[in-house]
Amino acid sequence: MRANFAMPVPVPSTSGDDAGPPEAGLAARVAAGPGPWDGEEWLDGLRRESIPESLLAGGAIAAAAAAGHAHKQERALNAEVTALCLVTGALFPVLGYDSVLALVFGMPGVPVRPGTPVPAGPAYSKARGRHGEAPARAMFGADAARTDIPAGQDGTAFGLEITQIDGTTLELFNDPLLAEEFGVPASGAKPLLRLVGLLHSGTRRWKAAVIGRYLDGENTLADGLRDAFGPGQLNLADRGFLSMDRWIRFSGTGAHLLWRVRNDAKSVPFKTLHVLKDGSELVLLRESDGMRARRRKAAGDLALPSLPDTTARLICFTVLTRTRSGRVKTTQVRLLTTLLDPDLCPAAELAVLYQKRWLIEIAFLHLKKTVRGTGRVLRGRSAALVRQEAWALLLAHNMIAGLAARAAATAGLAPGEITFTAVLSLARAAITAGTCCPHCHKRPASENAPLAGLDTAIAALPPSRVGRQRTSGRTAAERRKWISEPADYTLTIVPSNLPKTDVSPGS
Figure 1 (tube, rainbow, N blue to C red):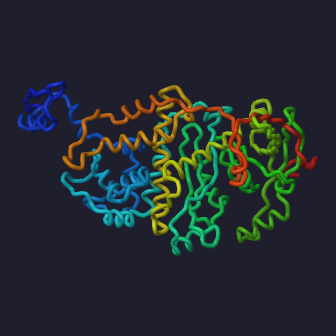
Figure 2 (cartoon, rainbow, N blue to C red):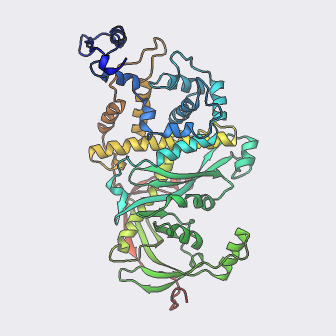
Figure 3 (cartoon, rainbow, N blue to C red):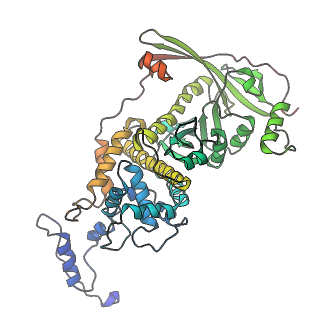
């Protein structure tokens, strides 16, 4: 019926203390026949997304559905539902497949026909196989690219966005096929998947990641992150990632680099041009004949041209650690950076800034221990399913980190002041509370903005302590010998032991 022939019909109110059940209000509207209904707020409950969907970027589920699911016409475990199950399974790693399915099918807004029975665990296992790795990777990429997550002020320095790059490993089932595919660190050990990620400091979320085998080195996988670098970014990296070729390629994206360098004199191909006023040094990177020969051999191309001479800035400093019990330790650190101006970027400030590289280690801890759980291996029994689950795990971490970042911005706190573990617990509780009762199949009454209550609960959390300075042993034997204790740190800029050169770049 056209709008100009529609008759306005008064609709019984369903709001207030005397309101009846939602079904009664809907029945009254249907009985009233065609006509413009007074307001459509009541429809919000029918359109409401589940909390996992609300925590994802818009279009993330659609990106997974469009990335090659083999059975798009599946009524129950279609591409969208399978993607939602993957995310939920990553958020609730202790649940079996049957429990994950029951949880997902009890959520509002699940894209299935009304009355569809909850599938069994084996059906979901088959759906995961049909889903493959590509949809999970596409879903992670769509969510990682979002720009609506507020970043904390501690995520920038010198007007640049701070990021970190590093790698870690995840344990898999002790299966011969997985061991052959991914590799093992030692005979009899479990297979390992290797992951290298790029973390955004301001939100504690992963901007990009590369998933490979344990047999693949961190440097090989790190090369796959170059496209995620760009202008306006300042990247921090630990020693081991530096090579002259990688330095040139990554700095060529327009990103600034602040990478740690090994202390031995022969590990870096540069010499000092001159010493700057803040104690840092302008250095010349020049590829030696031996370096060129090794690079050509690795690439399988004996005609590769030499790398061009490159100028960078070297900052050498010592860290004096003094604990409450009187232990004293001195560590020497060398940083190489593309920030050449000592007036705009003083060496002492860059030395202090480098401690933010530790944020990625904390993110790996949250990913492997908090979200996945201590001592828990990935469920997948094939290479594709293992990678699929790793992408879902990264996505689950980003969802919780984004929730914490948004709550921190609302409360005027830094992201580090929001306890990641507490946010994860509150999110899990909210997801469970918002599902249908398994007995009466009724959904609990709640507001149509499910994240509002979750944000309120997170904002009520006591802020975490930040700025604590502690030290502990790096190895298991050292940690058994002494416990973590408060410490004072003193940074001192010192000269390097590099040879001097008068050769100008390109000569």
